[in-house]
Length: 121
Image (cartoon, rainbow, N blue to C red; front, side):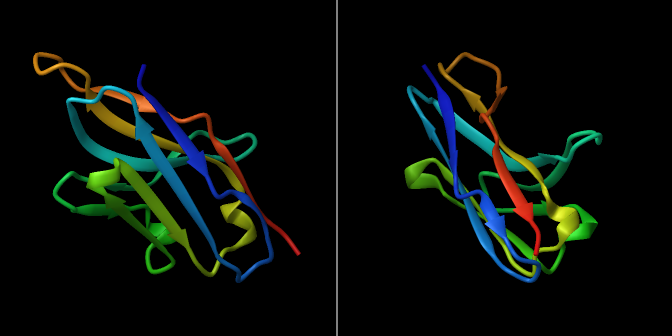
């Protein structure tokens, strides 16, 4: 069974930093793009950052220059380094990954369970 397990959320003061990690486990034939979404109370889930298997990245404008996404292909892991955090970054952060379980499968998007990030003084 394939699953994504996130870690690293918590409470931090404005201006502080957090690092989120997400590991994909199970029988995975092909791991493609990975990324992070977030959902704040009363708002829609939004893309924060994504990274392709080749390392190309994309960020939502509000986090550019503050957040950095990276991945370790050998460990099936994606990380999100968050610096200069602001109260408006407060949300549940979800990891996702596009994966194929068998060689003949199309990619499916899998989601982690979410981790809370709270930025508050």
